[in-house]
Image 1 (tube, protein in one colour):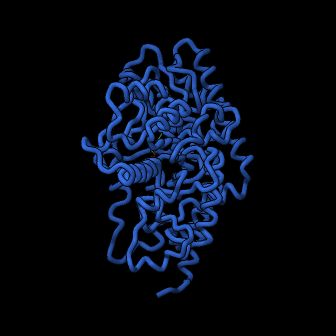
Image 2: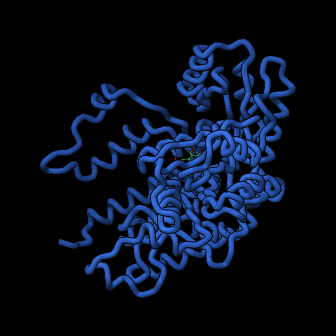
Length: 446
Ligand SMILES: Cc1ncc(COP(=O)(O)O)c(C=O)c1O
């Protein structure tokens, strides 16, 4: 029974107040994990025949939320963090509250129109042609999956099934999702040995000379590796792909946001030659989880590979843009809308300014590491990941230091490894992260 009761109004107030108050916290508390036993003692069973009513929100606010690390804390520098604008985060409420089916133009023309404008901005940053297009998917992993399925389907249509099976080629530093998605589609991976941590066209050509290129249907280059933030030699790789007639997918899940930053744009030369690329607005484009922009040079190839057809779907075949056709999904949340809303509200210049700000802090952090005798850079940062060593520390010392920082609510900086040795890294995507946040953390390693 649809009834806007007094309880519903109360709930609306409580939830809006919660969101408003969280947005006002500066910074939000870092918070941290609790054990299952601790949560069980504090919260107990929440699914009951009668329902908890208003108590459910109290439990979330008082017990569950504090056991969730705030990814947008300015000293959350692990993995790749997220730092949504208030506009984007608040608009999630609108998307959630509007019951939007984002799969087809027929059902969500207004949403798809807006999402496509946001995609267009991203495609233009990469220098993609007018016909380019795609959709927003859950994350870089599933974006790469859709691109790979499209690449393989395109190969199959043109050349048939290769005798020795399908393979894809990727640099040794490619994200774990590439090999994982290769397993999903049951193809082998030709891991390209690289001279340095940046895969070059020469590396790729050498790998093909040594291992052949039979059955290779796609090359995945990385524009901003996760561990070190390095952008591959996209131009050189595009050249080799062109020689071999291969699909080039650029995984820019983290790094391609820096296309909007003039100080880093040169590093991406050649991205305009790719067949598909991904960039995650939930990483460095200030949108909430979960949001990956997936762009194809020729979207009709994705439609041929991924579009679902059935009698009951005929009504949505209006000739308009149906986002479901371009990824591994039918039903979809209009997850690009918070990103669109924030872009539309603030304008693209604000994005350039915010990304440049994080790059400036990353460069200053690298200089600060170089200034201190007890730490050293793994390499100068290409983008906004600063990887460094605490000289003399063991894996256990890194882990103990990291745990202590989190427990004290100071920072979340998980250790990583490089060529088998432990390292620390700062992944800086939050414009609120300041030089003093960095020095505060480095001081704790002295
Ligand atoms: C370079 C790169 N590619 C892909 C991914 C996977 O993205 P997601 O976690 O959104 O699936 C990541 C995540 O950090 C990444 O850094």
